[in-house]
Length: 393
Image 1 (cartoon, rainbow, N blue to C red):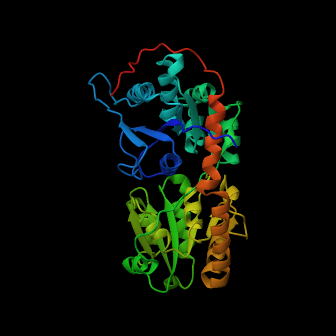
Image 2 (cartoon, rainbow, N blue to C red):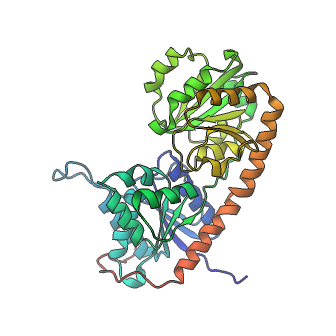
Image 3 (spheres, rainbow, N blue to C red):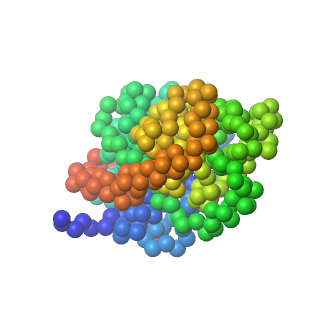
């Protein structure tokens, strides 16, 4: 195989706790480890991005508040910073994660640059940028335009690709590149973490999410409340948002002594290793990165059979899937794994093996690299207006 030169790649994503930001950050880290130069552009440093790592650079977007604007604008300063970084560092690729506002900003940034300085724009859709914002008449046309103007569009599942065609009406070429996960080595032992959580011989059920309405935390709690005996399990919720709105449900179901909540956890691996199984009751999922994260620690999932989840979990092989809304079915399958440790371990071993085979960095990163190099062989989209200075920083 002919060696290919390292690339200069810009990445824009949401830097806070959330699946798209985690994937984008890990992608940049993995690309840098493979010799590429990576420039992150966002309003703050992504929470999983290491300091002073080789070939990784962070450029902060400065957002000013002007009395003229009722709300501070992020898209325009983001686009200017994208254009500046691309020009100064001669970027080959601008890879944006989540359509709003990153794809729109990238397209605008490219228009500010002379043709020989324009990076190829890759837009990766992660979920609600299609399923929620794509259906909003205030966002949908702008998302459609950004996808049409992108040099490549990728989706994290075949389900999301079909939804992008259906909801946004986008008929251009797209590619499915699945999410991946590269777990950090936990700093503590499984026993130490369970001791911190106050968990002894109980079966520890894990749920990790942003607690948005589509996650159906009400069904999650209802399912756990049906497990018997109650003192045989604990539910650990790794919450990317305030859990207080669910306090009434916890009290109503008598779960106060059965639930442990940790909010905005950065080192998720510490807790993944402590879990025995995970539970997801979502109404819709484009992929469900949380399930994959658990799989890498041999933790099988009971989940609703919705969206892209069946592309991650093979029912009866490395996890158990139940139709959405069937709380009795969810509770029955959870109870089965709580009671049958051998079945739980068998599913967990298969989950780990399949995660490593299908969703590791070694399986996924080359797909992005191949896409980048293929794009660079194509001619530029259009001439820019060259309004951004390419002087050194």
